[in-house]
Each structure stands twice: as C-alpha cells, then as structure tokens.
Length: 175
Image 1 (tube, rainbow, N blue to C red):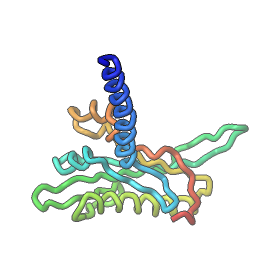
Image 2 (cartoon, rainbow, N blue to C red):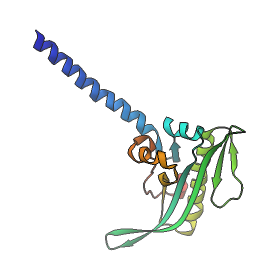
Image 3 (cartoon, rainbow, N blue to C red):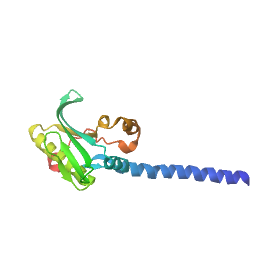
Image 4 (spheres, rainbow, N blue to C red):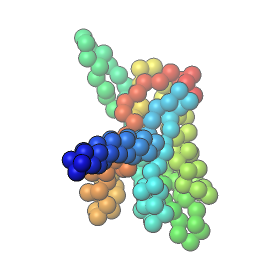
C-alpha cells in the first residue's frame, strides 16, 4: 500500500512538472521580438517592463543586411544599423523613445506605445531600404551590453530577456 502511494505521488509530481514547465514556456514565449505576417512584433516580459519602470533604459538594435549569394552560401554584409532606446522619465511619468538619427525623443503615455513605435519605425526603415537593395534582411535585438552592470548577468541567463528576432527577409508588401 505504501509503495502504491509513493508511486502515485511520484507520477503526479512528474506530470505536474512536465505540464507546469510547458505553461511556463508558453508564458515566456509570449515575450520577445518576432517576425509575423503583419510585420514586426515586440512584446516585453514583465521583468523588462519592471526594469523600465525602475529607470533602466532598454536599447534595441535594428540591423539591415544586404544578402550576397556565392555558390551555395548567403553572406550578410551589414549595411544599415539603427538604435532605439526606451526609458521612463521619472518626473513626468512618461516613456521616452530616442532614435539614433533624431535629436529629440518622442514621448508616449505607456511603454507598450513606445515599443509599438519602435516596431513601426523599424518596418518603415525596412520599406525604405528594401527599395534601394532588394535582397535585404532585418534583425532586431535587445542590446544587453547597454544594461547596468548588475543586471547583465541575469539578462544573459534569463529567458525573459531574450529579445532577438533573428535574420529575416520580408517582402515590402508584407507591411
């Protein structure tokens, strides 16, 4: 009787750990940078939202690369790069987005509006660059090196700080 009860508890714990981890993975997969049919999507995790609200600036690197085909290989040569930094202004309780080629920041009421602006601006830049060079790919990633030193270790080891879309070629009609 005691052995059967122990087996039941072990099987229950195993099933809970398997399905509990899947639910946790699904929640983690909701945050990140993704290429979708509608365009670029950036969703911040709770940990990154808390960091912004605590005064940490997040810098997103948007890289555009021209694709050169040689034999069976595709070579990416970096052509354009832009940085977007989102931060919270503590006195006005607003969110600022600094773009590297603009002198003044844009002001938003929420961090989600600021992140949507970054995604839309990146799409507009891609549309602009793809007319110049048709074989173009885009990658958007969070610059973990720009985080404050105490946060870097957890950012490199935690899944909630994984914001990298990977290289993706889109058609300009996609957005």
